[in-house]
Image 1 (cartoon, rainbow, N blue to C red):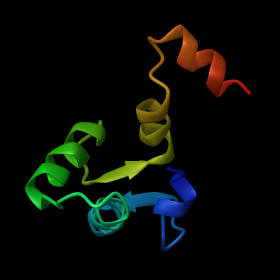
Image 2: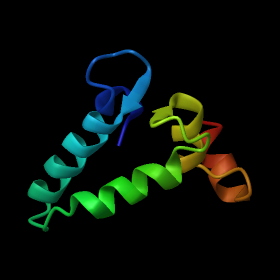
Image 3: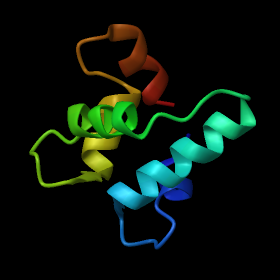
Image 4: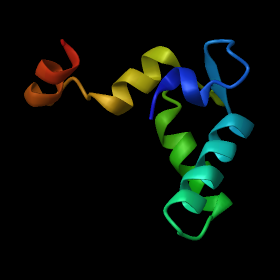
Amino acid sequence: MSFLKMDSNQNLQIEKEEWLSEARLMAKAYNESYDEAKELKRLARRDRNGDGIVTADEFEQIQAPQSDPAARLISSF
């Protein structure tokens, strides 16, 4: 998922409602159940500084953890 697609209001941050909205859409697209409590936990794990939003930097860490050499290589393209 692209950061810019999730950031529906284009303020370069993914707020809780944007995260949950995307989670609902993904659940529907994959015919899976939506669990808001689970999604809030996922958001909290990815929100590195605990401010309630996911920044572009935090999102990049989600997509390509720096400890994974293959992810670093892929993200360099």
